[in-house]
Length: 94
Image (cartoon, rainbow, N blue to C red):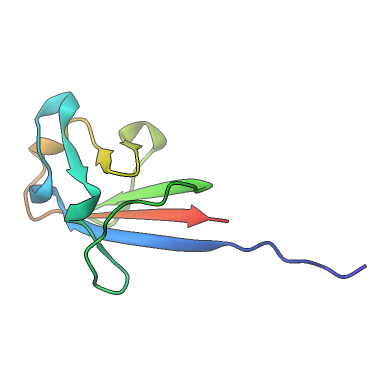
């Protein structure tokens, strides 16, 4: 029987904390405020993925730090970050 490797890929999106709106629990960054790996402006986050990783200033965050939809990533309390802080979201798609 042949071995069939599963398809696994990632989709990365980069922005800054200053692109977000809201305060406290309602702070979120729209998907359209991100650029993808090609440098193009994102239109939406993937609708189907296995999991995602959030990096704030290149530090991997725990799962309770954010929630994501196809249109935005919510980072409660993210409004206290310096506006130039890089935000990277990596989706693992299968």
